[in-house]
Image (cartoon, rainbow, N blue to C red; front, side, top):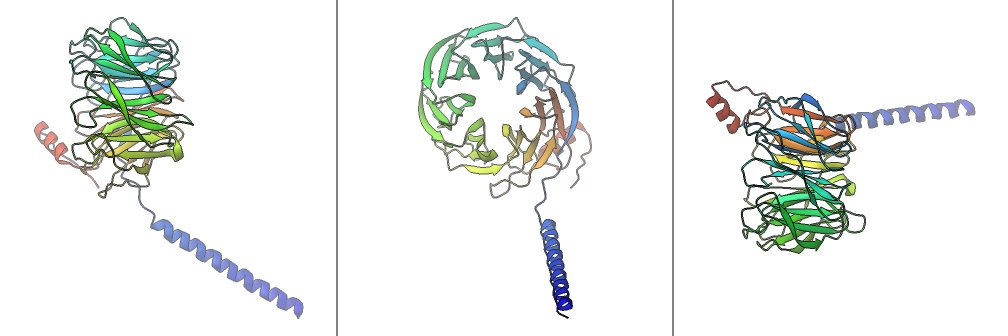
Length: 406
C-alpha cells in the first residue's frame, strides 16, 4: 500500500504538471496571437547588379540629366567607383567602373566647376587625398584629378560654406581633425581652416541648423573614448565653432538630415553602435535639439534613408543592417514614435550602403542597397499597397487607372 500510494501521488503530480505546462503553452499561444503585426510588405526585389570589391557607400543622382536617378558605389577594395545609369522605368543599364585613388569609402556629388553638370568626389584613405571627377553630362567623366589632404581622409562634405556661390569642402580625418577647403569655382581648392573633432568621423552632414542663412555641420564622431554627434555652427565666411555634443557615449555611426515632423526645421537622424539603436533628434530651429527619440532597426544599423514610404504623411526610415544581412523599414506612428516590429528584407549579405529614390517614376520612393558579401547592388521597388493623393494625381495625368490594396 505505501508503494501504491506513492505512485498514485506521483501520477497526480505528473498530471497536474502536464496540465500546468499545457496551460502555459496555451497562454503563450494566446499571447502570440496578440503580438503587434509588422508593417505591410512594401517592396519587392526588381534587379541585382554586380559591383566592385568592397562596396562601402552609395549615392543616387541624375548624372546624364535624363530625369532618371542613377547610382554610384564607392568600392574600397577595387579602388574604383561603379556607375549604374537608370532607365527611368526601375531598371538599370550595365554598370561601368571608374578607377580612383586607393581605398575610396565615400562618394559625394555636386557641381565643382559651376557648369551645371553633376560631379563626383571620392575620398582615398590609402593615399591621403580626394579624387575629383568632373562630369561631362552624359554619365561619363573627365580624367580624375587629385586633391591632397591630411592623413587618412574618412569623409567629405560638399557645400558652399562662405556664401560665394562656389562649392567648398569639409574633410574629416582619422586623427581627430576636420579640414575646410575653399573652392574657386573651377574645381580647385585651398585649405583655409582646421578644427579638432575629438575622434574619427565617418559620416557628417551640412545644413543650416540655426536658420541664420549660414551652413553648419554635424559630424558623427565615433570611438570607444569619445563618441557623440558634434555640431559646428558656421559663420558664413567659411569658419565654424563647435556648439553642441549630442548622444554622448552612444557610438553614432551615420547621420542624415530630414524634416521628420513637418515643422519646417531640419532634424537629425542617427544610427548608433550602442545597443543597435536609431535616434531622431528634432531641431528647435536655433541650433539646439530636443531630447533624442530612440527606436530599433535591426542588427548593426548603419546607412539610413528617411521618406514617407507608406503615404500617410509621416516620415519613415529605411536602415541597412550590417549584421542582419538585410534592410528594415520602420514606420512612424501618429504619436511620433516608431512601429515595432519592423518589416525586414534579406539582401546579399553585409549591407553597408543604402539610398532611396523614385527609380521608376511612379511617385513612390524605392530603395537600393549594396552588399559587401556578394558585391552586388539590389534595387527594390515599391508595391502599390497604399494610394496617396500624389500617386492618384500622377496616374490621372498619365491617363492610367490607379490600383491599390490593403
